[in-house]
Length: 448
Image (cartoon, rainbow, N blue to C red):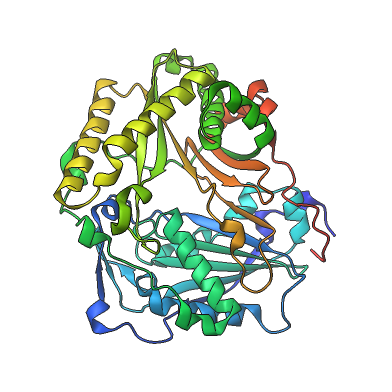
C-alpha cells in the first residue's frame, strides 16, 4: 500500500465515457419541461457534485459498472428531464439524449485517500473535471456521473446534477431512487413519481435577471486554495449554549470571522468593506402542500446577511444570521408562487442590487451552502451505506458544509484567495473548534 501522499490527481485515469438513455422513451407530451423562475436564475454551467465512497467489502462478483448503468437507465424513465438537454435559461428538451457516465481507475488504495483527502484528487473524481466531458456536456447536459474504482476494489461514485433543475433535496430524491432501483430492480414499480411542476407554481419570466440592474458576477478559479476542516459538534454545542444559533450558523460564523480577519491582514484596504454572507435557506416546508415531498427543482433562496466592518464577534455574526433568516421565513418564505412570487423575487433582487451600488464595490461576498441534515449516508446501492460522503468547493469565498458519518462533526470545504488561506488555516480561534483535514476513515477495517 502506498503512502497517502501518493494519492494525487495524476493517478486518475478515465477508462470509458458513455451515454445512458432511459430504458423506455419519454412520451411526446413530456418532451418539453418548462422551468420555474427560481430555476431560471441559475447559470447553466453550475453542476454541484456529491461523491459517495464505498468500500470493497460488499461488492458482488458481477460488473458493478454495468449494473449501475442498467439501473440508471431505469431511473431515467421517471426522472426523464435528467436525460435531456438544457434549452435556453428556462426549459429542458426532454429528448432522451442521455446522461453522461464516466468510468475511471484510481491507482491508489481508497484507505490512502480517506487517511489524507486531497482536494485535487477529489476534483478528478468529478465528471465535469474531465476536459473532454466538460467540452461536450457543460451547459447542455443535465446529469453527469463518474464511477471511479480504486486498486483495492472500493469505488467513488460522483453525481453531478445541473442546478437548473435540482436543489440539494431534489438531488437526494434522485440519487436515493436510483440506489433503490439498483438494490431492488422490482422497486421501479413502487417508486414515488417525482414531480417536475415548478413552472406551474412560479413560471419563468423572459429576461428577468437582466432587467434588475445587477452586476454580472463571474466565478473565480485562479489563485485560489481549498482546505477541508472538520468541526467538533461538542465544541459547537458549548458555543451554542452561550450565543444560540444552529450548528450550521455557528460553523458559518466561525469560518466567516476567520476569513474576514485573514482578508484584512492580507489586504488591509478591505478592513472598511462591508461583508455579505449568502446563506442558502430552504423554504420547501413554508410552501405547504403546493411543494410536495417528491418535488424536483429549486426551492431555496440565498438570504443576504450584511455585516458592518466593526461586526466581527461571533455573537454578532450569529445574531445577524438568525435575524435575517427569521425575517425571511416570516415575511417571504411562503410566497414563492404566482405573481406574488415574481414580486417577492423582484424585490429581493432589487435590494441586492441596491446593496452593491450603495457600497460602491467595497464589499466582500461569501457564500455558505449546507447539506447538513440531508440523508446522504442513507444512499445504499446494495453494497451497504457509504463510508464517506463529501463534495467540493472550487469558487472563491465559498464554503460547503456536510455532516460527518457519525454525526459528531461538520465537514467544511473552504475556498479562499491563496494569501488569505495561508493566514486562515492557522487561525487559532478557528482551530480551537475544528481540525485541518483529519482522516475521513471511521475505523473501517476492510480491504480498502
